Length: 364
Image 1 (cartoon, rainbow, N blue to C red):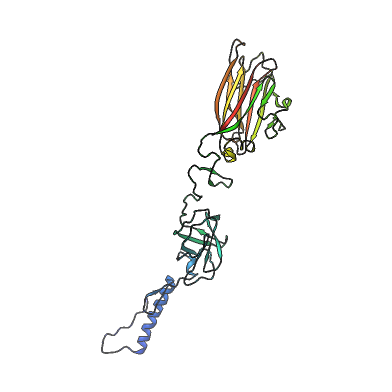
Image 2 (cartoon, rainbow, N blue to C red):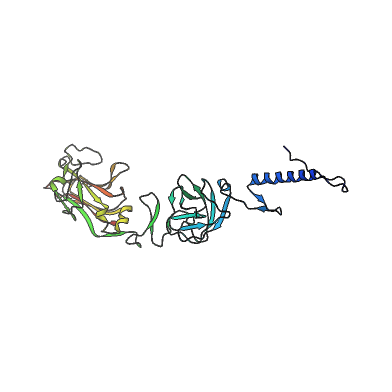
């Protein structure tokens, strides 16, 4: 519908009537009111636009800005005209006068401090806002927070690290920097290397009597290394798995043992607990035998739910007399978050000088 026409004088010598003048002013008034309603604005008496942004305007896409006057982690701004309540979806922007050191809040016109969050409901981390940064945020009435929708000062959303630090995924599935005990090195040797040896029918080891190193038998029971009668699980005389060839003459004495090493045991040996929870191990493995027997050291892969060989050895000596020795350095990746489960398989008898063993040298 077109706007009403204004009445003009065709003859400048003839004045408009008072009714005609009033009608013209009414048309101009209605037009001005229509613009004010349509664009959420108003006019000064001289015809210039007046800034009349209100809480109602902030519901939509309008953004209102003010400089921060708060203290560290407690941002505060004053809008003019003032708002009296927070409305879902309202947007505000402010220039921070301090960098945030931890979780932060925003208080607009003293309505009340509300948490500033990122990625919906995640509290801010150190360095997400820097001094002088213009921050834009929208209010979420459901969560009662101001969600930061502008770019974070720290683009990856984590505290900045320092030279020599490492990056890992923490228990909250977020990236974080951490400082190992030996930050300069890529390899963390153990002060006293742990080792295990099965020779004939006897078990030996650095922690033979240490209760913190447990031996988990196939049925789930546990025993310390000193209980040698529980360590040896007879695999039987019919072991025919092609991956474990054996001598038909001395093939009735295959044995294995499962060893469980927790991070709590490793943490003081080299690199600290952080290293033990995120790194692999470096092994020295050795086997000795006199004929075609197979020895194996494996580590448990929780994803595959299988033991994966890290060292296997078969002498293959056809004369059944000479002793064969095989030594390997192997790296063992971290397979579980809190422990290493190692399985040792060998053929042994009290009358034969055969054996298999490993030494844990350190972390990498």
